[in-house]
Length: 209
Image (cartoon, rainbow, N blue to C red; front, side, top):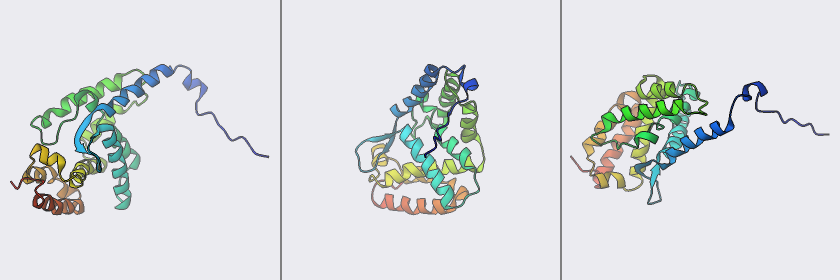
């Protein structure tokens, strides 16, 4: 005789005042991140990745690196930070790492996060708080997130013959400067990046300047 182990996922009392139309409204608001294209190209394709794809890649990469190096980080907090990291781009769009407007990008992104926080159907009470923690915080989780967020586009460029770098005429010194902070945060990754900056320059993907 088999036992029916199916359990209800909801508490009737807590679900009574929730409108599923509101819930699905918010889910569609999140779906908009798929429409934000980044500058990096997906490997073995001719298309650019979108910000939702990057967010997934970022979360998986952070998780994997945290376990591989046995880092003393809170995995739940780390993954939440990775998942909200680019949500502000739904309103602000993606800002290229080497764009002149890069330093102002957080203003529009923060406003976008505030809008999402206030959207009907949003069940994530700490959405703005988690975003702010990854944006301005100094925790181990936010430090790792920043390292991996710089590592991934570098890795994609390295495996697409520097396509984004070549298109934007990016220089060796620009890349080195953008990655310099990793020397203190994660020396083994910084050493790998430096070695491959040399390689990319030798290949002509980065301007030697």
